[in-house]
Image (cartoon, rainbow, N blue to C red):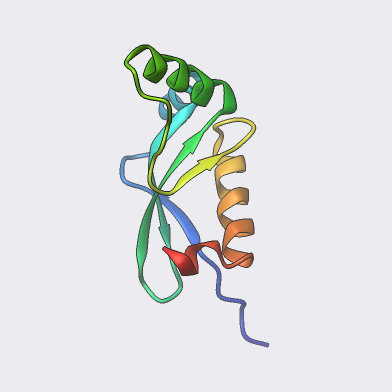
Length: 99
């Protein structure tokens, strides 16, 4: 039986415990790239809901009424486990086909 093709999350910077802790604390990760089975690479950004709310509050003070980031994925915690799980679920749902 052939192995099922899946997307894979990679990072544009070296991943270690310091990076993991920092990203989780910040509630944001902008170093993720989804590698598709066909070789395409799609940059993604992960946000914690509280970080997103904080960013919106800051934007409102600047007169902007939105937060919009290309390829934004909101997850419960900015951890590698949640990021990888979100990428796999989104891939299975066909999300990346539209990007």
